[in-house]
Length: 129
Image 1: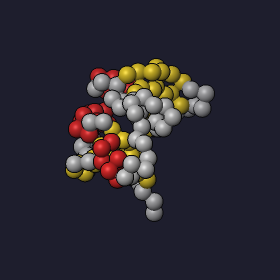
Image 2: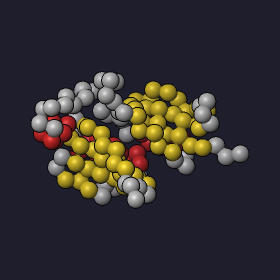
Image 3: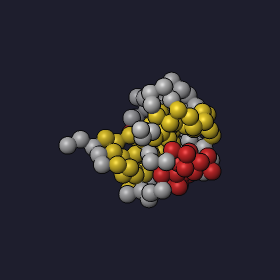
């Protein structure tokens, strides 16, 4: 079995933990100095690592992404049951909408926003027939 951890490097761990807790409507299962984790689905964990902790971990061998540096920023694409509700919660929690919720070419209804650290989040849902 594989459990996939997606880890975002964040400037303010407490701020980001609060943001994702509100938006995803879940409490972290791990919240210690330097790392917060949310189990978001079977086999999937979202981690938030403070940039300072990542810099210590990598011993300056890798430059940690600066805010809105799209060369290294990831997209967190979440399939959810109500994309509109998740996107609205994100915006109310401080996210910046960058593409409104709409039907996409690949068959999902998806909207995009930037989290407080500039990571792209997509909230999408599969439209039923």
